[in-house]
Amino acid sequence: MPEPWSLAVFLDEMGPDLLKAVLETLYMVGLSTLFAVVLGVPLGVLLTVTDRGHVLESPGLARLLGSVVNTVRSVPFIILVVALIPLTRLIVGTTIGPTAAVVSLTVAATPFLARLVDGNLREVDPGVIQAALVMGASPWQIVRKVLLPEALPGLVHSATVLVVNLVAYSAITGAVGAGGLGQLAINYGYYRYRGDVMIATVILLVVIVQALQALGDRTVRALDRR
Image (cartoon, rainbow, N blue to C red; front, side, top):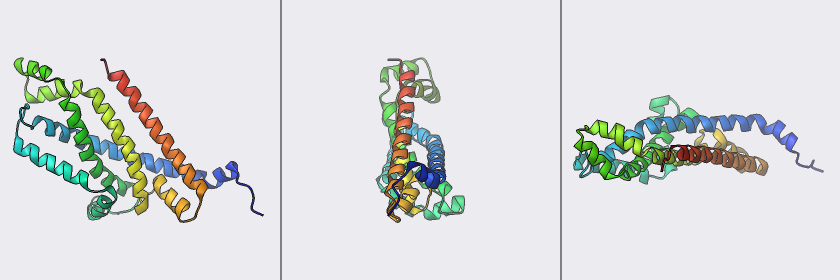
């Protein structure tokens, strides 16, 4: 007769693996968020300021950047991961593990964040920009002292949306050997029919997302002076 399920026994058996998977997930999400912000925010700024009527108007460049962003965003993430295998191997020397997953997560997240940043910057009151131009501000000063500060709460909100999406994407990369909670759920929950492991990974993912969303919401409220 099988022994009844016990939380203590489950944690004793799977606790170390769950902790390792959580840390790998946070590692993938943290690094890819950092790289996406470094690349995506400037790209989003360029999308805005090079558009017609803006401070660095260049319609050709704006169309080119917009096409690149839309093209990458249109590729389903799991296909993007496979397509980026040569690039991933070139950059990190392997295609499996959390570090390898950071490459595909960053490539997927950068245009996503850039489009969100573009939307945030377009919501800035044009009158504020015109006032800065009248006072002789340069395009760089307008970006640094007007656009980014005025849009800061929206930018933080967009970063929160990005991080939450990256948690979901990191779980998908578990299907191709990236590690983290996604791979643990697949290896134990799917291949070994361990429903308890599957439920535990889902709970942990929900807790991580809720914590990140709460932190983002709290930061937005602190920054929003309206």
